[in-house]
Length: 307
Image (cartoon, rainbow, N blue to C red; front, side, top):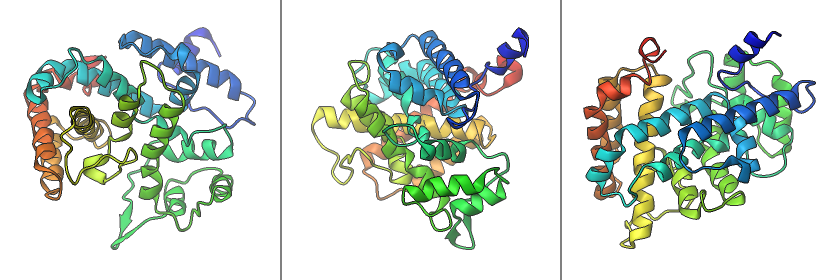
């Protein structure tokens, strides 16, 4: 492989193969170097040299890391209006941008030493090559059905690694498996914490599917939005992060245009009448800010303009 080929190859993160693969360590090192450089370029106060586990985990989630960087840049772009509209306490966007960078780190698997299960998790979180609807005829499709539909190589080894951790591929719904990553995000960040990855930031990052999908690993109280300023602050910023996360996914993964993505966000939160009004109202405020920022945001999704 020539030098130019190598530069082209690692413009985005490589998929790291299992530890038995002869190029595992080399690719892992290259991916960690790329992650370190790209996070440093954001200049958000996240020092990955102090967080070797976080760095290794970010290096393992491939395209999801690239999406997280895009989320962080979106937050920087619209933070001024968000701060005014939501009365956020932080002067600048850096803390919320750190949460954006880290929010999908659980897609590398649960906390703990790397094993075959982590390799299987990473394989199952690679964005599907073919459109996949996790529901059919009123039921949820299983991990096994997903793997077959995507014609994944090495399915037997993946299923065996899952079974060793008590997950039956022919019974576990794929959507439930994907949702496990929020709990894993919380555990990873709690295990490799510091001044730049504090307890509140871990809760915010791990709660990015809280309102839409009821994923609440930090056990935040949604029945009665607490009056304590710090807890409410976590809920507000988790709310904001979730709206931006879903917007980014609708634009980049579902290939929706700006207006269609906003309409979808409004439909989703409008259907959640069981949620506290204050949080639904804040979600709508984020949508309004996104709506006013079309020209600034389009460059993150139009490759001809961003190229």
